[in-house]
Image 1 (cartoon, rainbow, N blue to C red):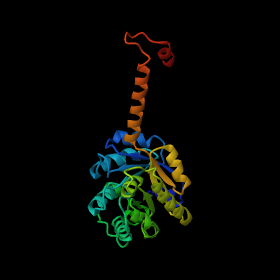
Image 2 (image 1 turned 90 degrees about the vertical axis):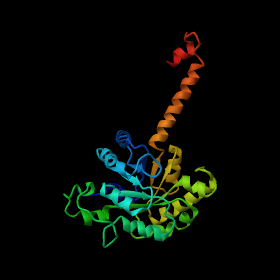
Image 3 (image 1 turned 45 degrees about the vertical axis):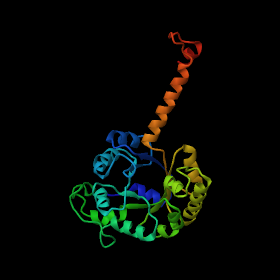
Image 4 (image 1 turned 90 degrees about the horizontal axis):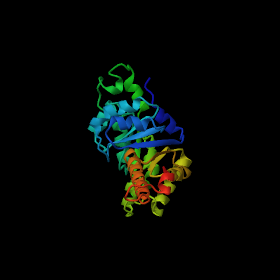
Length: 271
């Protein structure tokens, strides 16, 4: 059956914990998807992956209970069509600043009469033409998320959320902080103030709202101000954090070991 559990949970404003995937390896995608996240964002905007990597990446995630979401690199209709044909059903779109942009994206993800997506029968999304009502079903199951990443977009959040075919909003704290002049500081008070303001509106209006945060504490903060689907860090960020933490610990322990190799009491106890 062609169903989108991510969209169903989103529209109910269930609290979802997401992962973030930036490497192009299907093995890493499969690993992250088996970690226990509700969904994982396959990022093809700021990563080594592109639309041409989506087929094996989506296949890897499909073997798990985690739902895949594709973060597109642009609003290009050809790339949107390709991602949808590969089987992506939930998509994030960067830099949606206006209602007009949101309308175009909602239409690009749906077949006529609701949109203008190009038609083909034979692709992974239709299970190679084995889903007879694919066109009708996918128009309802596709999930389109508009990313708000500038002060203009945040000011237009209410209007963008009401566009037919826009199923939720996502605040990009990194770009938002840069556009406000805070150089990537996602914890800056002005960034958090704007995020909380939009979070309050969406909570009151029942609009699905997501973001991505670097630490579990920041994820919890986002939930507390009205966000309901939040990703934590990324595969590359988590790997780098673990690597740096391990190196730091090893260098600390090295200080307790004399150059002749004779272990000290501290080093022996640590082992």
